[in-house]
Length: 185
Image (cartoon, rainbow, N blue to C red; front, top):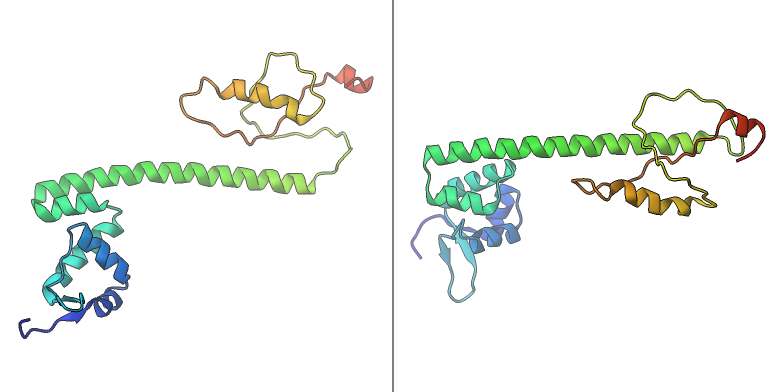
């Protein structure tokens, strides 16, 4: 081993706030090779030469680059390639942001429904104005005895959808004013 300042894997992990397992993983992925590995102990030693490389890897990981793309960049540090990869990554992130925004809205909607359910009075019929919302109307004549009798109809609603849908909405049954006043429901 040459006489330069080398750092044990644990020291490097601490300096860069990552785990030793992550450093080993980077090594296995072909991203970061230790400066020296002691053949007797297997201890890995890193020199300052690896610090710049590790910084680049960490930066690209913060940008959510997969390890395979990081390796491709490190193997070919062409500025056109990295520009293309950054543009592509920005598109991936934009799609993820839309997905996360949709998930956030669904959570907000579910929280609103839960709070509404917890504050509702049971066994009381009342007229309530509700905000405009999307409604799906089933043409089938249903005679449900329990909420479980609606499950098959709900499955029919989603069977021809392009994307898989998860239904967690409110279910209602329309009753005419006349039937309601005659208590025929």
